[in-house]
Amino acid sequence: MRSRSSRVGSVGLASNSRIEDIVDGKLARTEVDLLDIGDSSARAPRNALEELGIRINYLPIGQPLHVNAALDGDRPIAPYVIVSCHGDIGSILLPELGGDIADAQPFTDRMGPDQVRKHLRIPGSVVIPTGCETGEPALARAFLEVGARSYFAPTEIRRPHGVSRCAAAVLRAD
Image (tube, rainbow, N blue to C red; front, side, top):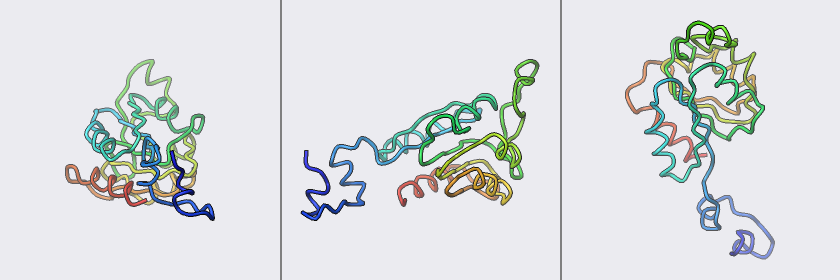
């Protein structure tokens, strides 16, 4: 198999083309951690992104401890993090828990700026939550403070499928 540098020329310049990366045998254009919080709504965007040649790390989230396990920095985090969720006034809504399970959580019901700052570490990733009103400036700043390279989220109640198309466009444009 020829390397990109041999095709570009004898001076060893590498191409920035993702198409050439795929032609050279790379299995995916990029990688995404897809957090599916609560309702399995991430399955359609997952299928669409995989069709675009993007490797998806599908992470079903049923409790705040799962969010921490996915995004606390103890495991490698993909260059893109899509949080498929519901939101409300600058917070990501989490599944309602009760009893001993709720008592074992670092936070419950919602993840706002304070919880993000305290529990998450996202070095260099682009973060794309899909929940309504998760584009509030305080939540965006919190994600940027814990290392996100950029943050892209709706500021109002979203229309069906709008954010999924936007997320795909952002991933293709980078």
